[in-house]
Length: 475
Picture (cartoon, one colour):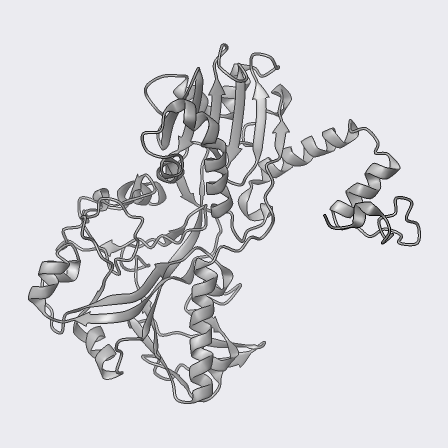
């Protein structure tokens, strides 16, 4: 097996901006401009936002008049909307890079690892996407394709893949499409990062130790070879070249290479949980309505004065999994302070005109739900198209929480919650602890047992270790 590190997406020369690591961990590679292509940035949408909107928010100076269309290749994001009904994933190559792949014998069964230039992003208070100031720009692997078929026939490409840029014009030599046996895109995980930690030059990569041993070669590197440093292989990767073909000359190194690729795919696609998320509801009052505490709001429930359930209810759920509850009718929430703290509520104010980057779902009987557009498509799928509002009212919380758990997979609260959000949660936890009644001895022992704390086995007043205790017998 050969692994091919294939550099794709915008970079410092083409597009002149990094692709975003989205707040939910998705790695969204932004395709480079291509005036010959028929694919418009404005026609491609990812989770409710067009690529044009995403690029404009991140880089307002991007010139769409000069670059209205893009080279969507590799075309492997199944979540992108505005697809033709017969869409299939594909990756194209031509010219010198294609000749390079042929020369090194890249064929069916080999695996492309697509990487690009990425930077962390966040949601601003107004719902727009922005780069995290000071976050490093790094080379990160964002997807893969194991080759299942190679099409070189121009007529067949045009008939079966008319939407792909390598089928829309054929003024280059050695044109072909690679089709997958398997493929996928990744969510952010540390093993996918090529750039060495704390390294300002993103082309300096940190690879597993076996890369610095004999029996492994990486094409297009010239005199650059991986060298061992602090237990890793460090490579000052070539500045030019699209495809770096990795080959193994020994059985041992071939297994090392295969294991590395498999590990990358597992880390990018398997949802591992960094911490167990609980639906902990934090009560908020006027004094808690601070300006920056709710900038990560993703779902906002507002109930009218006479609504079914809890009249006057306000429920704010952040993308990091914090749930804040207040009430403007039966509690002390003041609308002026609420508007300053959560501007999107003021911008909406029960009108038909929705704030930018937000969608709306009526829940029936005076209950209203605002949903940030980045998760709206997922939410609609979860609750079901055409479901009556009163039924959505029952299931919306489960749907929202499932989305939040997925987007926070493998992360810690420090990764997903803002500093102001964490500060508010800490303040409210301290406040609640001060008013919490003291536990009895039995309650304390049960609490310790449930939470895994050790207790004195010699002092067993409740007979938890007594084999004759009927409560310890399996039913």
